[in-house]
Length: 226
Image 1: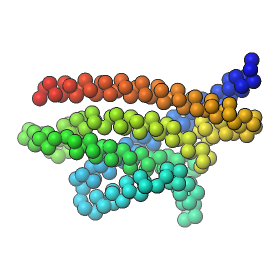
Image 2: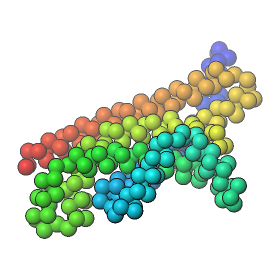
Image 3: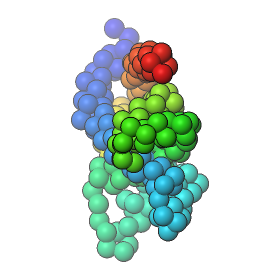
Image 4: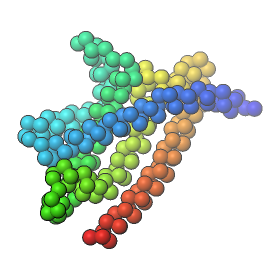
């Protein structure tokens, strides 16, 4: 067996376990919390009072205007200087959540704004409150617009979790780095890590295509029932 293949097979269980234990949970939790934060931020910017709108705009401006790696460093290495100590995984989770929240808020805000005003009027005419109209009429239609870009954001997040290695989270990429430190085979190990990320992204891309098809069919049913 070639040396490179033997090394890849030997290291594969370690890399996969790191992916299952850290990369995937970090991705799922960050996206879930970030999407919730993004929805709150989007609704605040569209319908909130002026002070909250300004705060939401400032948050989005700061996060979108600074590198994710710098944000992670500020949270993990910077906050201890003012007495806030965080373990690596929670620090990464907070950093990715804030980042996803800012970007997803713009996607959700645009999707909600794309729903015709007549849909609000139709919902109010049936006796719905603002909250009911949002939940039952506006958000389902906005989801059709938001799903493709949000899916792309999720796929990008899978790859971006490799940045957590910089703040000592033992996820997939840092596990590859640790093996490299003992084997001195960076090319083989980094290619293997890249292939694993590629496999994850390919699976998610396939799921994204199916999800978009499902939403397009749902959208067609809505149009037919109008």
